[in-house]
Length: 323
Length: 268
View 1 (cartoon, each protein chain N blue to C red):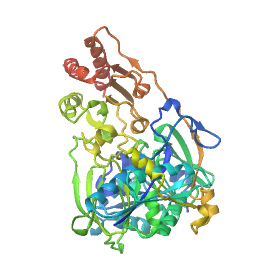
View 2: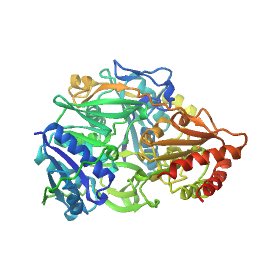
View 3: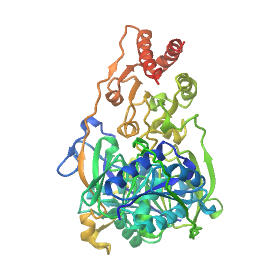
View 4: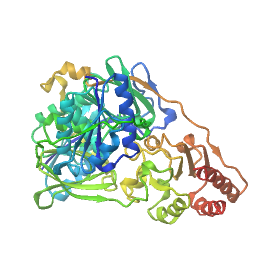
């Protein structure tokens, strides 16, 4: 079987990530000469399925009560059951936290091989090969998956969407016997306050690092600057580990992978694990006291100065330019 | 409560990119002058375990590593941080075995070590960053798994796991035994062991096994590539030349910097 399955969560909607995933799936299915099938899980699945039906060859909706909200064991057994029935050549997921959590276990249940954070999927003879960054973004590896199916979670936002077809594919409603697993249950969910848009979708990002020195300057210095240029705020792992800002702000290898037009790094040295999160930024610019800071190796332009002196002045200058 | 923490020794990921080289033929990073360190997320896991035990007042912590002989240093450091027992499975096979091999070896070693309530691993490693050990280990052991946990509590005898999501956090209640993967947050920054404890750690017992001691297919484990194989490793050349803004005064330089930022943002 040469079919490709994409797994989507209804709650996220047909966002850039879902569009990229469908695009990647479409091209891989065409190359393999198979069909592209979507499995859409959870609350909002029916709506998302009707959107994605313009790109895939068939879509399955599973939105029964037990799956409305994400639960790792329920979701895993559902995907394993549905993917098992379709016996695909490849299963593709996005790189959101839930997909990352599920993918290796899904591969194990299907007798396949998983690999994650892929930026490219290649067909190589009978095998699939996936390109990904390793060593915190310092190197790039090509990984050949030995078992079938190949279960791959992708940096889905960086994949181009696929054109919509004239006729939408058939949508099936699945009703499964879900093995309830009482060993874990979610008792509380909390959304952190974020700005107006998701960090991953932001076109301009102002980000602070260890050199910021405390939580206050994020509010008093960086926030007004970000507001002025329509930017989202972000931070390095050091700033998050210090407890200055919430972990959801973290950009890097294990944080958010962002792709803004402008990434303004303030008092961030530029460790490779941080750079791995901004490799797709169009313009990286920095304010740092150390002209040898690794961040400058990736910058289009920069200023060597203490941010405490530059940022207030920069706000004045930018405000004047915007008039 | 019996806790087991898996530790991986890796090449120091903080080495600057300019000093980083790969051996293309062997498809691995060159050691160069870099130190070997314990993967940070594994240390976050150990720190989370230590703090959980401090809150409980009781509990044993066992640390386990699958790696080269040098991985003993990671285990000794963990003992110095006050883990109780340590075990090393010596890897004399593939230098970077695939994630399923690692999970199978760890699962076999865990079964040999005894019964554990919580099996803790780092969310991923700073070298290959596969992020699969926890999930595959849970499947090998037939246990549930919760990923990206940053805090473990035990109010009224129930295990509570706080974990990070893309938009915030979730609290899960769990029945042991369970596998968790640990991520970093402000509360689990690893402690620095006392020098005296580091010295005494070298006199503490350490269990050492070879792949032949675990009752698994040792040849398959040594091959380490039944699940996946790295077929190419390269260092992309993409350094750009940074243009530092110039000017006699801070005001001039900031003006130049502001103009360039404005040029980008006003075009959006």
